[in-house]
Length: 81
Image (cartoon, rainbow, N blue to C red):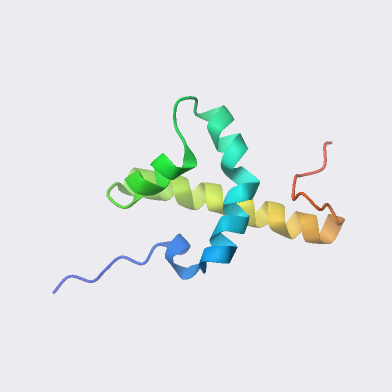
């Protein structure tokens, strides 16, 4: 019997997932021209490599969200150094 893989984004509710995606959607599109976050999410269901990439991007989003809470930035963007 095969176990279903639990992906990190499966543990998020829809509102939390959307909130995190807002923090990374534009940066993902800029860093990967011709690709979208929605495309990555579709591919991640079938590809371990894409699942890992999505996991990494969600971690970036989590860190941005945490930074915005500590810095008081309303848009969740990291402060420029």
